View 1: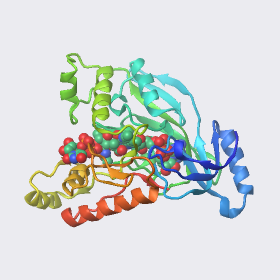
View 2: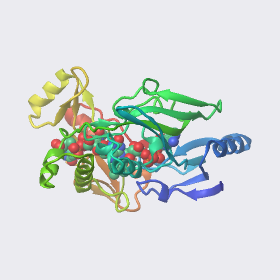
View 3: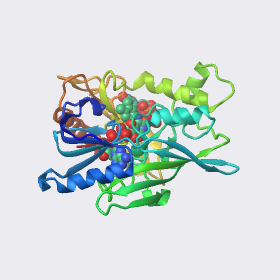
View 4: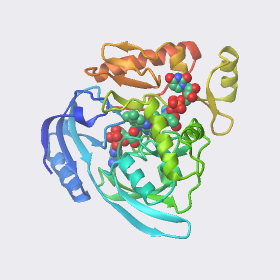
Length: 341
Ligand code: FAD
Ligand code: EPU
């Protein structure tokens, strides 16, 4: 457990932003986290800002971080128990998400296949209740253990405690920056329930010549769809969707539809409607836009990119211009999905 000073975070954020941490350390168990917190307590009060880091794939660093970045490296996958329908699997927060999904798929543990190829680590997955292709984390979630950074105790959170919503949880809201998630337990199915109605999955499966559905085939289809439109952070810096898809009332949607008949939208909870932010951003002319090294991706307008040396401030400034133009044209305020640090 080595503490590094003035440590470059460039390799630790998928936007590839060149910012540094005043202090940086990894922890691979609860004791090490406790030890680090004691060290922090002894450091000057001005220096005590804290960030728990996972894979860095949903953050935008707009400054050097003047405090402690603690990277969660808790590993381990443990089969807890099973019943006739489900398997309960406890996973360390530092495990890579996609590798864990593939681990489950190779054992025929079903449920996570639609969530293939989402970057980042298991510990961050409940933060925004990650979701893709018709499935959300909450559908497979059983509970999690989280360490309270101030009262130094471990708490168990059930699904209800987490207050999951669309790209939301209690950890992004009232408990923001208060907990380090240590492990997540998933409830996976022995017999799969296939989710193929979302987006292009069915077409992709047809293209692949799949006649008998399997979780392996769905995972492969999802991976191929994602690779066809989302930029690979190893090649072009990004954090996936920069904004959330906005949810509006049915009345607001109908008004928009009368002015913009092609507007793309999906049913949401109750009478609400979820608008495709990518469509609105593209229709404001941003798709493929580039200013220096900050840009809006050419295949997915919801994704902002760093072509090399953009700063976090430049990406943030571009996001503000996009928010303003979407508000001006559609009267809809886009909310950021990415965590601004
Ligand atoms: P980080 O970026 O490290 O952290 C994100 C936030 O969580 C930070 O505020 C951090 O402080 C906090 N945090 C991280 N770990 C912990 C912990 N153990 N305890 C407490 N707090 C913690 N997201 C989706 O939902 N669906 C998608 O389809 C999707 N596609 C993406 C595609 C690409 C190409 C990219 C780059 C990103 C995409 N994302 C998607 C966003 C991202 O992958 C997820 O949000 C992921 O869960 C972030 O994990 P991370 O470990 O990288 O989190
Ligand atoms: N669209 C456009 N232009 C664009 C992008 C999208 O017109 O440039 C329209 C198209 O009609 C397209 C529709 O928007 O069919 C939806 O696009 P897509 O299927 O790519 O999904 P999305 O709504 O843009 C959301 C999530 C993604 C997730 C996919 C698949 C949010 C904010 N984003 O994107 O999650 O992978 O659905 O489920 O909800 C992320 O959160 O980082 C992320 C990538």
